[in-house]
Amino acid sequence: MTRAVFLDRDGTLNPLVYYADTQEYESPRTAQALILLPDILPALQLLAVNGYQLFLVSNQPSYAKGKTSLGNLEGVHRKLVDQLTAADVQLTEAYYCYHHPKGVIPAYTMVCDCRKPAIGSLLKAQDSFSINLKESWMIGDQVSDVSCGQNAGCRTILLDYAPSTNKRNITPELQPDARHDSLLEAANWLIQQS
Image 1 (cartoon, helix red, strand yellow):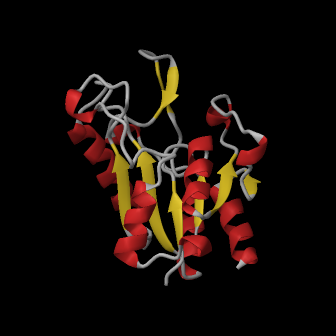
Image 2 (tube, rainbow, N blue to C red):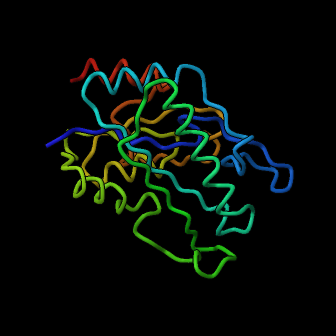
């Protein structure tokens, strides 16, 4: 069986974007708004060269909430993949959840098994790519990332990305295995644990 690193996207690989219409930091709604955080490419390269398959697992409810189009969200993903590919970084698979229980687009307004902290996407990866979840990691900037990883049996790392910290309620039973300030710091620490 193969080991993997499951990565959140927004606040982990790229910064959140402040939108005046909601007065909140959110996921990029267009490709033009996507930029990578510093040291993301070396961090992903380090994980890959040390034998981890890389998976993206991201909640993207902006379409369900009527804030952007699916085409725009697909454009954000294409730009991300293009930037990673240019640096010889390959994602094994990307799992996006476009649903939200309080959406305004009926077909995407639901409770589903792919929206973190649900583990549907990790189970798909396990089945499709023979992933050993107990030897794998979930890395993200939200409590939902930690909860998802723990619910699937993975070890977890919480990134202390400033715009995300005000949304957290970390309970004693929901402690990550580690906390780091950046993905590169987390990757270096993770490799030392192997």
